[in-house]
Image (cartoon, rainbow, N blue to C red; front, side, top):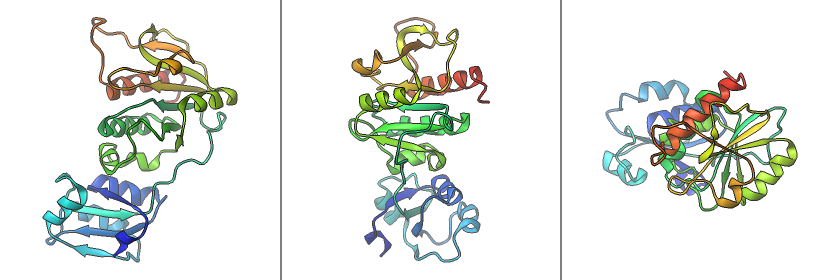
Length: 242
């Protein structure tokens, strides 16, 4: 069975379609039901000429494979996601996003979806103490994470220093910073979004300019993925990305 081959699980129509569109990794096997689900009509035209394994199984088996019922009756086993092998070139990727200790894979996926839609050039994630690119994260991104350049670092503090040396300006999303709407952003830049509960790690927070979204009262805050989406869109308009 193809699942004996090193790879990763994807489930749901959008993640599998976007994986096939991106053409960055190989489809090893695909599992679905009979009769075929409606989404199959959108997947079938994109399948490679030779698919090693199309297996027809019950929905119960798909539920167990995916660990959820939210799979649209389609599950795939694919080659591992390929991360960027080195830090980004500021001349080629002038607007990047760094995520610090984000815990919820659905927040991660939602942020990656917004990043792709807005046109963010690259993403920096930490290998530890952070949500990772699980099948649920790809599902929450509607598969759009497949099209992003993502760099994974063992230490965000080290990564900030590396990217600063490369020329990036850092902007930290916090609750007590400068009004994000009045800041003049300098390219190349990196926006940092912190943990859902406590925000950006204290030793990182002081390594860039703190920026804050205006809100009705200071004792509330936006959801991390909502704040990230608003800030990314606002910054992109300020620096004429879109």
